[in-house]
Length: 96
Image 1 (spheres, one colour):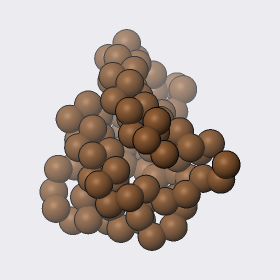
Image 2: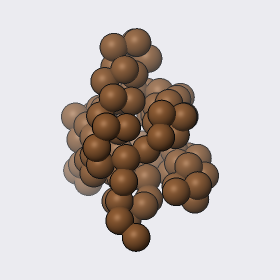
Image 3: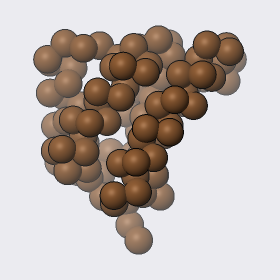
């Protein structure tokens, strides 16, 4: 299986998860940019920052969506955000 772009529905749902769980910007331009890049071509790494800091990224690899931040920026609060976001992103990943 090869990595592939998300559908528009999947990308929009993933963005909501990033906003709600990781504090990604909720403005329309940020959402549009994310959906655009995730649906046009395979985008393996997308920096959204949010409450995960500069290293806050969504990864689309091996047909799996997940979020990370820089290891040196990990806190208990950020670990909890990542775990919650990843659990929700798993639902989208399983559709692929």
